[in-house]
Length: 242
Ligand code: MN3
Picture (cartoon, helix red, strand yellow):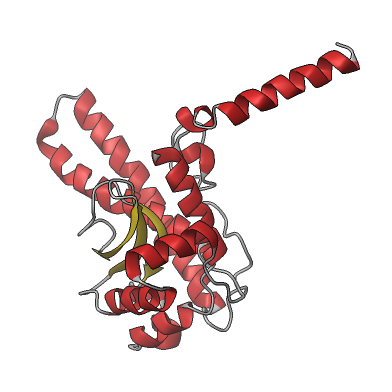
């Protein structure tokens, strides 16, 4: 191929992708467009290393809490999810289905924990950011303003009964954003909703430093939420769901 042929080909390729932007994502999955890596090449759930050092989020989130939270709580969910799948597959292979009810519930719990924790680490950074672009537009359409969203999601996270998560999600069935007050890791969900920002209010997330002051922990998180990551997640969610 000479230079002229190369350039012509490049123009055609570029033009094709410009003319048919939808096709670029027609076969895309969440795994293709979002850097969340939940499984290895064999489909086994894996615990990724944190995207920063354990003291990166100090003083808002202390290094010891982050270490225990990631390695043992998130890590435990990964181990649990792998065992649940193994037990389900064994029950199916043995045609012994008395136990699948138990392990399927466990998988819902452990998989959801793995997914939410994986998102949570990337949702945090050590500097203050604010939503912009498409994210800010959708925040304003769905909640009125960024301040109103902050108040709303903070109130839902602070008031969860027991352990759970405050979640900002994109709901493809409405094209808007929605807030979910999730109990444990898998309860009170909306089908179809794609999580963008997740706030872990399990006691393990804050008790070493904040003791019983869950409200203070939630308030301080707004200093370290990575709204750029939330915006990337929204853009990807819109691309894959249309
Ligand atoms: Mn947790």
